[in-house]
Picture 1 (cartoon, rainbow, N blue to C red):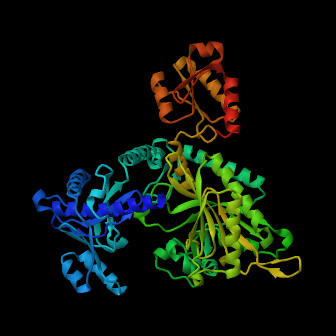
Picture 2: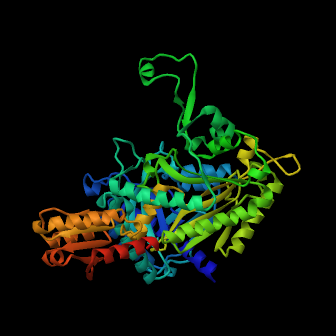
Picture 3: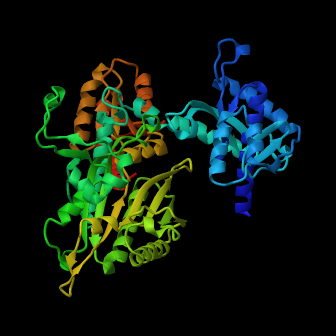
Amino acid sequence: MQNSQENKIEIIRHSLSHVMAMAVKKLYPQVKFGIGPAIENGFYYDFDLPRQSSEGAKAGLSIEDLPKIEKEMQVIISQNIDFVKKEISQDEAEKMFASQPYKLELLKTVEAELQQPTIYQSGDFTDLCAGPHIENTKEINPLSFKLNKLAGAYWRGDEKNKMLTRIYGLAFSTEKELTDHLHMLEEAEKRDHRKLGKELDLFLIDPTVGMGLAMWQPKGAMLWRIMEDFWYQEHLKNGYELVRTPHIGSRKLWETSGHWGFYNDSMYPPLEVSQTLKDSQEGKKSEIKEEYLLKPMNCPFHVTIYNSKPRSYRDLPIRWAECGTVYRYEKSGELSGLTRVRGFTQDDAHIICAKEQVKDELKRVANFIIFILNTFGFKEFNVYLSLRDPNNKEKYAGNDEGWEFTQKVLEEVAKEQGLNYKTQEGEAAFYGPKLDYKIKDCLGREWQCSTLQFDFNLPQRFDMSFVNQRGEKEKPYVLHRALFGSFERFIGVLIEHYAGAFPVWLSPVQVIILPIGEAHQKYGQEVLDLLKQNNIRAEINLDNDTIGKKIRDGEMQKIPYLIIVGDKEVSAGTVAVRSHNEDLGVMTAEKFIGIIKQKVENKN
């Protein structure tokens, strides 16, 4: 039943994109049409809108035009228009779309794939489309959709092509679902980590330094340090050893690993390290060309450390972990705060083990991932088991035996751990199957974070081996694994999940002391010193402001506890405590310290 409902709403969303195109055509008759598919939660259509002479010098659309288009869509829906599917010849299609250059380009693709053009007619509007569509516009609930944003989009996603205007719409089965989703979007806007990151002085991205490269303000750096210290402690408890590797590696390393060829669309060009910048500026040529590349991942370095000396079955399993900063190419238009960057720090680990150790190691990692996610407040997550495409085996590294074993053991572990998982055939990386963990934040949005992945490529390319109990050389199994995924992305998700109001144990500033007047500052400083002696992250506000303004500022900064000190507190040697707009009363500083320590110990 659920699949049927999901298919129905997808068809309605697709049909709404056509209704929107009909409305745009009526309002802007000279428009040229791109494509208009259904997407998650809605639909879009790409338009090439010429300068509208009837509206003076105005070109294209603005967000203010969307209600007008939406109103026209309502009129069209009310007319109970049929969607009629037809298959026509290539010649007929070319004549029909003679004034639509983007459709003519799509027709060439249809012809090249030896397909027959399919059109849908809706009243006086015809579109090149394979469907499916609803039979009649009366199937659309006119109160369950809304046009919500505009964006620029290069034709066919190629920045060499013309930029078109993309209109996005939301569509659901019921008006309530739409209302709930709009409320979620409103809440998401309040929680946007880019906005909160600036307001709370957590991080900065500045074009002078470079887009996609985050700099951490003192509070953000403290948040990072809290997380990293916790990460190191838990890894050492869980039997990992720490390694560290450079930010760059020689071209030979990346050629050996295969990244030079198969990962080159995510890597930056080589650095010439056999000469200085000055030599290069002066046009001098180096006698020996020595090229290095910024690393896109840590794996080849860890494998090189493994291969630095002979290994025995007694050495296995090896668990090596590193918070290693990597660099990957991203188009400037696709960068987004901390969740899409060019330089980021992976909480990486590689487990090198024998076949008989694989299952136990997978279970250990699966338990570790759940522990980490739960500790940071993520109780809900979905798991996706990515398998290779059985009809295209030649594109994958490794052999059938290895793939069958690893895919089977990953699924066994997922079942035995009681994970809510879905299999995704054909979604495995070329080098091995994996389990991806997508956490759900407080708004129910999914975020890709933790991953657990096999690698058949590196053991093969680097000729990894160990001496087994029979005295023979054997290839180990290599497991990649990340818990946060990357610090940047995970922190971005944390900011949005908590709306910047972190639990006490994570808060960069746990307490702020607010003296009511100048006469109370000395006592406030004594309380501050006592808190710091007890490893509590505290600050004092000595500004010459009213206590009301100081309280508002502390709450705006989302600091968990505000301590107010005035005449009564000074004379009694106590503190007045507030938390999240709630008055917790007067108590001794020692009692308050106990409350904080318990919160930190319980990770809340």
